Amino acid sequence: MSDRPLVLIPGRIHLRVRERIADRFELLETTDATAAEVASEQLHQVRGAAVSGRFPAALIERLPKLEVIGSFGVGYDGVDVRAAAARGIIVTNTPDVLNDEVADTTIALLLNTIRRFHFAERYLRDGRWETEGAFPLSPLSLKGRKVGIHGLGRIGLEIAQRLVPFKVDIAYHTRRPRADVGFAHHDTLVGLARAVDILISIVPSTPETQGSINAEVLAALGPNGVLINVGRGSTVDEPALIAALQNGTIAAAGLDVFADEPRVPQALIDLPNVSLIPHVASASVPTRNAMADLVVDNIVSWFEKGRPLTPVPETPYPNT
Ligand code: NAP
Ligand code: 8YV
Image 1: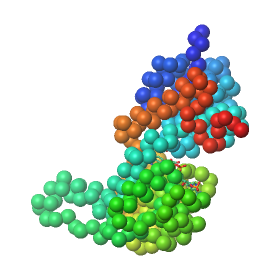
Image 2: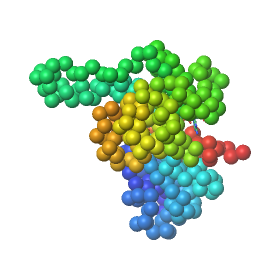
Image 3: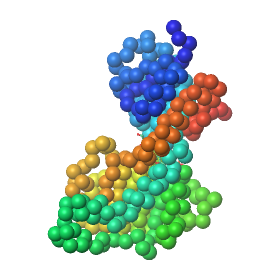
Image 4: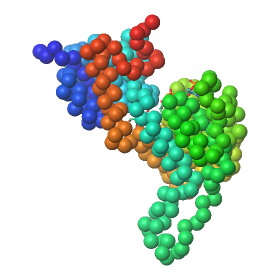
């Protein structure tokens, strides 16, 4: 038997992760996070794992020798970190390497939502420019707006810095104000929504953020308001958002993330005042390659040097 550690990949993952894991370790692949098709004896040999998506407590329980889980993405809400921490298993994520891509996408989604370029392009492609004349003026503009950022972490700060040259006012809401920025901090999300007319959400999925962009926050954003969500779908009360877009409580929304991906409510798709993209904020070849490398580099570093590169705060290393 090989003395190379056995690493599990439950379900689909970026090809580069799979190739690099197979080069360096023994690889065990399962169709999904239940690993139902694999005998317990084999799962008992697993020492590492790389995952994109779900890694539930039930799977952790079936892996008594598991030491490290490399999660693809900076958000790791699919991994049961409490179950991992209780067993002393390190969980790693892929922070920073995607900041620029996600921030660039956010600016593109914001402009698209406000100026309706997706509909304008379809108008051209359908030949309507020639037959019907100029595309209708966009009712909304970025000019003179106030932008509120919900979450001013690694990515939120990159978004804020990109917005400065657009000459908009910038404010933010986090639980703790940052000492290193000059943007106005609001103690509450509803207070921020009241003060701005664009709200950009880039917070993790946690019990606290779940449904926090609700009917009250949308009403506070107001009839000229624009919501952009690039964080997690769970942050938004989706039925409340649909109602707000239908009845003019807010003006428009741009969404990269949804409550029940990849299912997107038909009511959202039918709306004329939304721009919808399928969770692609980090989805360029260079950025996804960098994320894949960081997943594998964490696992390699754990088995070669005994320490991870980017452990999540719930499973810190060293564990003091
Ligand atoms: P980060 O550096 O940890 O920043 C998170 C920010 O959210 C911090 O400013 C934090 O400030 C704030 N926050 C956390 N909980 C909050 C709460 N209950 N209320 C208000 N603010 C809260 O994370 P990041 O690297 O910027 O990534 C953020 C998230 O974006 C990820 O977790 C992921 O879910 C999402 N994401 C999505 C995509 C995509 O493809 N669409 C790509 C990358 C990331 P405080 O702790 O002071 O509250
Ligand atoms: C990825 C993301 O699309 O990093 C994150 O948190 O949401 C995205 O970059 C996702 O993690 C991979 O499926």
